[in-house]
Length: 427
Image 1 (cartoon, rainbow, N blue to C red):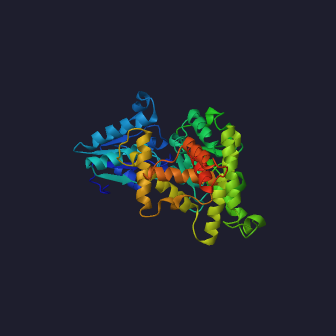
Image 2: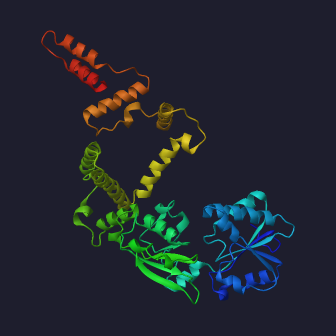
Image 3: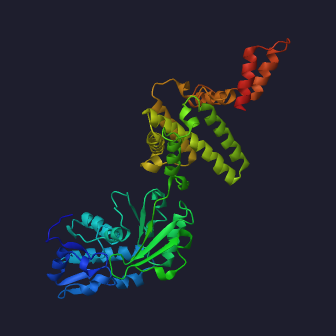
């Protein structure tokens, strides 16, 4: 991106809607232009733009395409074609060009690929206007900014313990889609402030519970955003960060739980094992609510061990997440790399090859957990030995035959009993 006046593609911000918030730089740019292309003429500032240039808009594209994504793709394609002209193009968008402007993001990427220089003329963003309306400091308060059009796809980015603005809630349908995504992590009664035309004299502000967000179509225009105040720690119960905060509070020396404060990795081992077995029982039972509860109990043990590590300064939950995520990426080169596989069988063979490479010269059975129940441990030993080419385990029939032969005289040996058990494990 080249911030010079000679750039063939100049993108300027129109501000949030109040003509008084149009920057001097943008006004001077328009005053000296012959032609300006507007993403949309349906913006309050447009009526007060400097006289002189010819103003064109892409409003017709909104009626010609089925989705906003198609609209933005077509607009970006046309703007790039205009930029290739000898005179280039000035393209004006609401707010700030780099705040919630999908066409600009497309243009920056496509222009870079095409070797076309871009100049950005900053504008007052809708975030500035909303911050003034709500009397919040986006930096100090840790404001989270998301796009309603992408909220369904990016709902995992929601952090309820931070104040949040959802932009581009154009209409009742967009509000309904946003509500469904927000209800994944917020309670139905959580307050939401619906703000339209922030920064203008005619600003509209409505406070509603989340459950009623899409009940009134009259609250929504193309200048509408949502503001959600942060959830308290005890109300943020549907996110991983919420669970992490609860466990940290339990372990806090200042007002935490005396029992949790006394725990160590060693004292918690039996609970980890018990919760794992209870989770297995729930999976066997197949009842979704019970599975969710027992898997939650198991997850709590993982988070608690990570919190212990963080308290001791040895490791934290980020290390736990990084270890498993890196391993999954490393062992799935057919997903995250360019390796080609033919079916699940080849995936498993590749997995074992990668595990062997990671293990290096370490003894084969070092990775068999000593805490496993005896029969499960024996099964793991057999499986690893077979995969390493050390021979197949005996069949149950062969083991029983050996046992009968060894007890023909009325006496069983420890070796023959071991062979029988080894065969049963194999079966």
